[in-house]
Length: 572
Ligand code: XUL
Image (cartoon, rainbow, N blue to C red; front, side, top):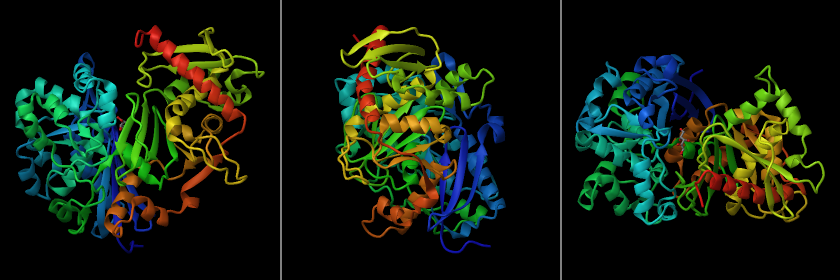
């Protein structure tokens, strides 16, 4: 039966796929479709969505492929029966930190699109550079060193912009692009992030960068809410070039919900979009993921995928070079705290495969993890067994691939090496290690609250922890997460399919289009969100005694990381 009432769309342009979903005003998912770049658009010569040039550490993707994906995903939704005429608003998310360079012809080409032809065939000349450096790119060490040094130290850069210099951030990327391709840089009229690139395509002109995503560029003064001239000058190649680059970057509106305008005619004619459909700001994939639920301050989201990401929405700003603070995409005064690890699922799988040589089954891993005492302490006076398990070069902390196993005595603070080989205890120890790292780095952001059941004052910990991603289905991981991180109300799994990020984008469109004056995202979505349908409690949280023991282990964990950093010559 045809859907009644307004519909809203959310897009997620991620590394390997473009997903699109449709929801109604009550946040009910009505349709979804996706395009898989390797499977559907292999003609672009990509693998896992990207092209690599290992000699220079470059990882990039062709925006023309994303344009084809837009046509394809809309074709698929049309086949599935979506009535685009009812779509009154749309928003989206893009993988963070990809940078796109538009040519001087871009806007003219976009307003004159012929609805009978594909986007990619008509927008070839809209790009000054046919590749977009991707978030996995690591070609900008030299530029990062310059960014970290520019204000005096990485700490100062993190304090001003929310992050120290990172390879993938647009400031260092633009600086390298300008020197590697000077004539292309001159031909670049505007610069987008992946999120604002996609917004621009739907809008038919270059859309502003969004207030959340702009804080992932190393050039935005998060306190003053404007570009920092000194950092822009560094990327641009001199004080006299600041205005030119600021023009390429554009202005950034403060309101993450205010529409940029109506959908480009191309989409109205070709797909039957309602010409009044409003294009709301598109943000990064991580900020969009925290919009998939009315996340409250002190709630944490842990994404357990190939990598691990930890996200919190918080009013507190406590920056550090090891992690990221970004503007919340919708709510002024809130920040998104983000930890981004390279190692996660792969590291756990390595241990799983040593426990169960037949491979692929988590049962033996889970049984072993649950049968092992916390921190491998058979009795309270035993040392705690701690480890770092990094099959890939890790950024949090900055350590090369390797494994470190140590024993920590919390009485004496003594740390000593133990045999650095696999033993079955590793099943528990690796999950503990990943959770201890999250606890260590988020401890300044959590507060003491009362236990709702007993009224007893609890030690500082998250209110709820929401698990998402592949590892969230694993009961042993959920349990160890509860033991280490605690949580006043427990550990929850988000039961909203694999599209949290696109869903967050669609909710943002609902909020942008239907909010009353001054109504926050949390308020509007909170009032329409049916928790019993969308989340499932999978473990109790705070466990008295165990939580405190892991608190001692955090000290040892910190010392172990510092010791490993010293041995690798990263700190003195
Ligand atoms: C975040 C980051 C990645 C991408 C993934 O800083 O670079 O999580 O957003 O798409």
